[in-house]
Image 1 (cartoon, helix red, strand yellow):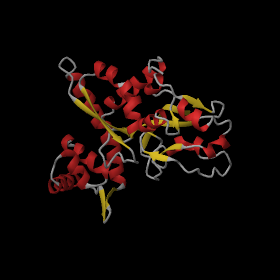
Image 2: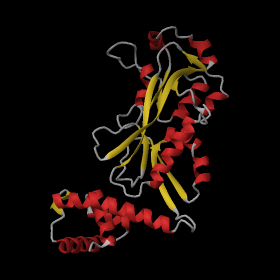
Image 3: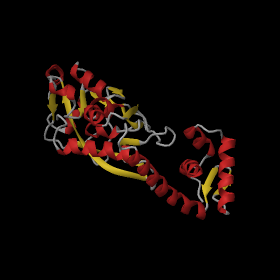
Image 4: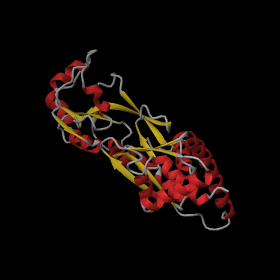
Length: 300
């Protein structure tokens, strides 16, 4: 008979492809974890892992067991919750990884309603300015741009950010009002940090030229914060690419520049692993965000 406790350990080893990462996740020493997996292999009479210098991978039998394990653990988790449904909900933590810009002004709009409805789920929001990895950071859900080439991830479209150009009246009176995108060549431009690891640099594409080659203009200043871009534009430093839904913009005197120019659109996704058996808390947050968006209660 399959030992459910060993299957839970097997799930983490198979998910991470590493005894080291799995042992940290479940707070069990690596030697103990290895012994448990060896015992599981012996009880099943088959080899579950291929061991190589980069770590471990699943054998064909291991792949079959992994798929079955996800189903078994999901059913066990559902059964446990149904048996405890008359009691207090089990306290859980949902770890979310996103960008500093999304967390600071967009994601926070959904949190009050969610924690009010699901007080037993503790949210742990981690903000990044550069690209981040779900596994390395033990993240349950990522809210960010799409991750290409990852077949083991479920990526659901969540929202589209449209950006426009803004500047202060004082700046425009001093340096003139651009009439065409070409006129931006002669203006002070505030850009997102010029680093290949920084996410969402494409929000500044409106500032990067109007030719097919999009010859990049020289920014007057770059900074890796959309809030900081807004503040600099507000103080008359230059022209910045800003999301019109930014809450700070509502009570601002910033003026839209080149309103007829098509804005840059950035799609963000709700991303999590396919191989996650406890998906209820993950799905609850997704459903809550989509409902708020559908009901038009985002405050934009």
